[in-house]
Image 1 (cartoon, rainbow, N blue to C red):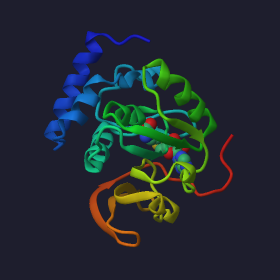
Image 2: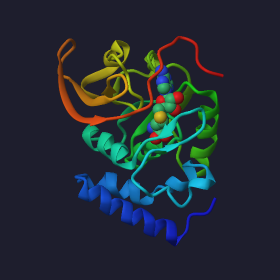
Image 3: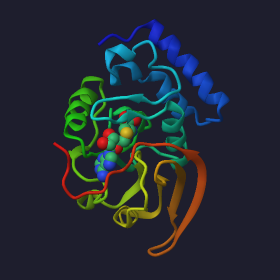
Image 4: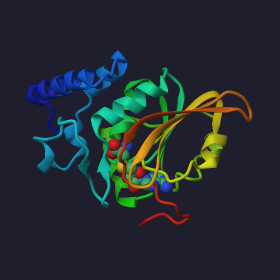
Length: 216
Ligand code: SAH
């Protein structure tokens, strides 16, 4: 698994593009500058890995666009040691960004192939989530709740109520809401029953699939 000066040069260019697109958080930009995104993709994408695009991974899913990864991370205002629940591990790239930010990450993936791949790859690259599980993100991770922040990286038609309930008071949840196209939506828990909601930007994610049985 090679990461050389050429990859680093391409990452630096990607960071410049993200700055031009409005990402300001230095810690988020540093994370993008240090994570070998090409190693989260099939080797045939090596020359494209640092373009600001989503790309196909296995199981008909995609690795999120770097701008979106940076944007979701920035809006969550992640601080070291915070407990973060991630729905949709996918390639594990967003997971690595959250870990670079110093968070304690609990992540769920419903595609077995992707779950197994990320579980194997992340530690090899020095990234160790607290928990990586094969399961249904609509249920969340009750046994580890409450979380400081929750990030959903698949498009949900409706807000999963169980996830809101797993948020600490003062915590934030970011989720793309909508069917084929979504609006990135940020919820803040202001009290036991008080939540505020902010609609941020248009985006397009693979769907958050609703079911109780996970895919083998
Ligand atoms: N953050 C990932 C995004 C992958 S795409 C990355 O950048 O690589 C979204 C992922 O969400 C897919 O891997 C998909 O299988 C997963 N997903 C969809 N519905 C889910 C659900 N209900 N629970 C957990 N994961 C889900």
